[in-house]
Length: 337
Image (cartoon, rainbow, N blue to C red; front, side):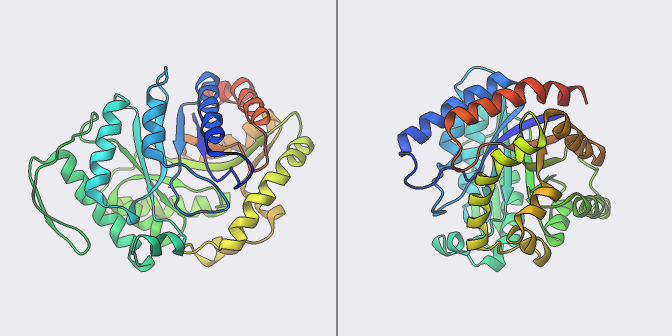
């Protein structure tokens, strides 16, 4: 089983200057690489104050220059906000820079502020992501593309960048609600499960995903990816104590912003009681306890567990220590699963 490190919403405004934020990110990447993580996954948000967030294309291109063979992924790119022609060529470029180590993770996004800034109606996100992926795959494989769709149009387009991987990089498609799960199944992409779904909901959604794949004439992909909030310490009590402040800060922002575009049950969970959320969906505890929880995801059919282990108000030294502990006690055992 593979382990990934996801950079999420962690740095608060006024807690660190942006240059220090970048230097810390680079140091964390090197620690993640040394710790034996299989992938480094970078998110994509805009105007997400109070969090401070760099953008994935340039960050991942810089990380590709570091030694090693770690996979580099967007997790996830807010594809409905972006032009698929540009995304197709950016992805192809990064695929070459990384010599085929790039994975394109995409999702709908959930924040009205972002949709408004890009002039996108939130109700169009599902249609846009499906049409974008269709057009991008044609741009990766065809010499000349004419496409006149509901949202995007090109006539006689001749792509100027083709991916290193053929026919193109892997696509992880994030989904939180049942309609989104069906959309991933219809496209045949690798399912990317977010951090808030509980295990009971995940099992039901995997069944729905497999059923939709079958009805759409797709084979079940060999990979499936889940993201989890994660905190590992010498024992459960210490892990809870250390994690609580960061979790409370992060999820208070989610409560303030709401979780638009997901189903009502999930929105209530993410914006509701933190204790319940920690108990039902987070991976927390000693290395042994964390591994037991991770093994449940292997049993569900997941091949990759992407973990978030750096949180608001966590110092850089604490983050590096946490990465080192996971690299020593957790990842080697995951690789044996």
